[in-house]
Image 1 (cartoon, helix red, strand yellow):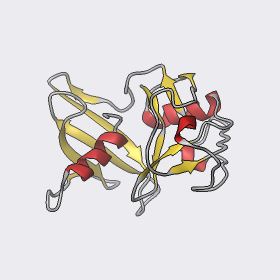
Image 2 (tube, one colour):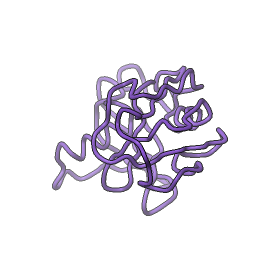
Image 3 (tube, helix red, strand yellow):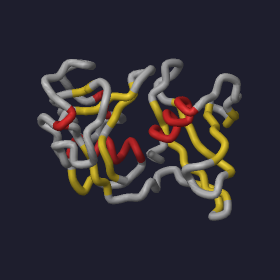
Image 4 (tube, helix red, strand yellow):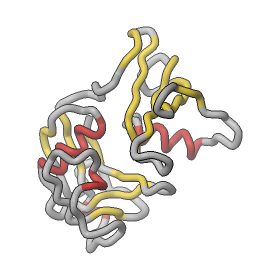
Length: 166
């Protein structure tokens, strides 16, 4: 579990600036992704420069927040950074949280911010590994599939990013 940190605002992905970025911030990201303890909180675009908007700057987490967006920061989209300052994390785990299924049918799931509720759950199941398979969402009481009407590569890209699959 390592890479550039990006957050989703409901319509697009954006990066996080490395100003004041530290292990407490990485702790929240690693926990949110189910990747164990933070090993490092590199800045200076360690895993490459992002593109598009920079959503968060001067992030100041205590380390126990449920998501990076709930930590103190300058305000959504308020920054004085360029992508050369994109924040990253290196976590101890390897996408371990909430991994389930048998070796023959692994699944990977993650809780993600949702407009309709505070948290929604998303997973892939039935694939050869945790990064391929049928997209399923949890509505609070049961898992269901996602209809493929209008489904395209952009939708798949969001799912892959949310699950940490690239």
